[in-house]
Length: 371
Image (cartoon, rainbow, N blue to C red; front, side, top):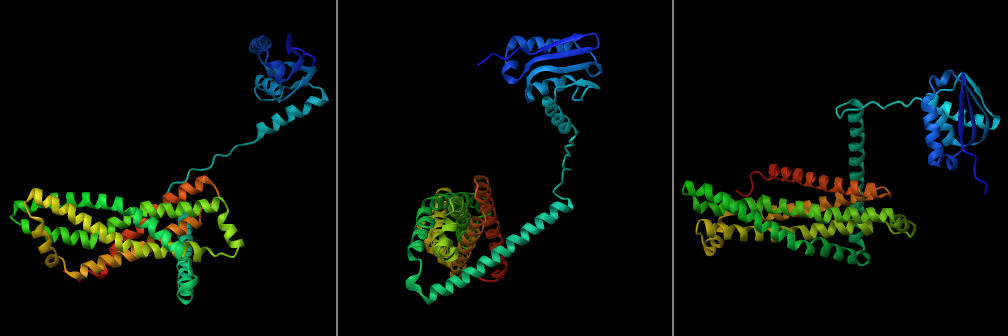
């Protein structure tokens, strides 16, 4: 392969003659590039010179860009070009005329952003209501033909969302019980109200903290897992394959998870309550000297039975809401990894928010029950 001629620039009086090969292979030569750079720096008023490029043997966009930068990104008034090289500089000239418009920065309180959020919120609300309607229809079908129901999916979901969550709920519940009992004991001891620790701990754990704590842990653990599972199925096109095979998403994917969490959550609430009360008993025994026997004997009188049923009812509702939110966002994930991570994060945050809102509704509705 012949060696390309070295690129050269000869400047005389009011003219500059460019010759040789102005391609990337020739310009890669360090010595040739140093000479060209020095010559271009020495030329003053490059745009006023008469540039003669007719002797250029070969040219590519790298060489054309080098000369274009030396001309101040503007075609000189006097320029002689070979016809085959005219296209390079014409494209560079057209590119320079393009104006890149900077998009205006929109604040979160601007009207466009607020309208966009409104449309997104309305879209999610309609989709969530549609999902609930589909779930009701699937439950009716399941009740009519239980022998053809997705029993394996329900059993597997109970195992993953319920049994495998026993460890983390027990640990967190036990620690929360210790902290709550220890802080309450310090305040009650100042006023001689040590015996009321059972009332405070029992009511707060069984009625509020137990269901809410279990729901938050399940939303972060199982809710994110459900969203990620459905998202991966979207990425791998398994959801589309199920529709092709005539397997509906609602009956095989959503309903089993909702039923499983509605069954597992009340059991997790009872388990979390027991662990939190156990931690409270340990802290009360260490801090105030209250015996385990006294604590267990006084607990039924301190906490009416209706509070247990309210806690269990919260568990059922919270479990169903977490599963619905997780499935809703899981089915909306686009087939890319970025959407998968974003959808999982939004799912967990939304599930926890909805659980807290539902807990507030329970507090208002049952404000006069269980006291």
